[in-house]
Image (cartoon, rainbow, N blue to C red):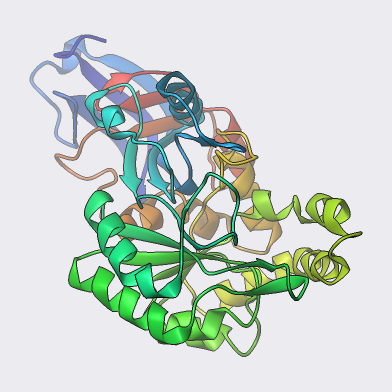
Length: 363
């Protein structure tokens, strides 16, 4: 399509969980519900239209070994785009991906800067590895570098105990989160373990990644404070393999990881039922491939989320949470068209019929 072309999307347009329209137009790269003067020259696409999908935990510019070059980052972003992911919250990357913002054919990225971890308590080459006395300064640095988010590593294996444990003293975390908020940034943290969660929430954290350690004691605290979770269930599926690989050296840790995996669906459903905000993320870019957002939505439904709630976790709700528009009058036309109703079967998300980014058909 040329830049001035008009696109007419017909069928069912899922503007929101409770709002469905029969058509939407794209004029000058933007959404309108008013029939334009050039309607007769429009290109028509028939199907079920959703706002561009959101992967709220993704890593562009990162692989299993650390930062990657621009060509690899481009392939990662294109893979996500072709899967219908048009908005990414990049939950930590050591690579500078600002150049992506200049590309009209690549997804929009909301960056959390680089991970901030305790020394020798995270994956090599991923994070700033520091000690607690430097946490506030590094959080301030990444708050200024990011797009309104900062990413902490809240817990990791402690080799001295052979199990998961918190990485930061409570006082250091409280001061760091306060500094991020002063600078206008929200804070999220990688957390697997149970004991890590309450101190972070009480310190004012905004989101927890993975959140496998949620229990009946901490779920009400999350709900009361409105702290969101991004479960990354396609990543949690790898826990048994990870446990098998480390069982000989760290048997306590391996057993813990297996137990967290075994109750993963119950954990997510209990959080959802309690009113904890749940959003979709894949954790792509470490050891996981990109383009897995449809798989994550299926996983959320396996956990017991209703189909509309699972869809909201990657569309309407996720965009609102991140402060980005969906299918609203005048918004950038970032949308995906499907053959059938995704509310009836979320598996249709794996096969986009058309992908439209900034008003251009890109897939």
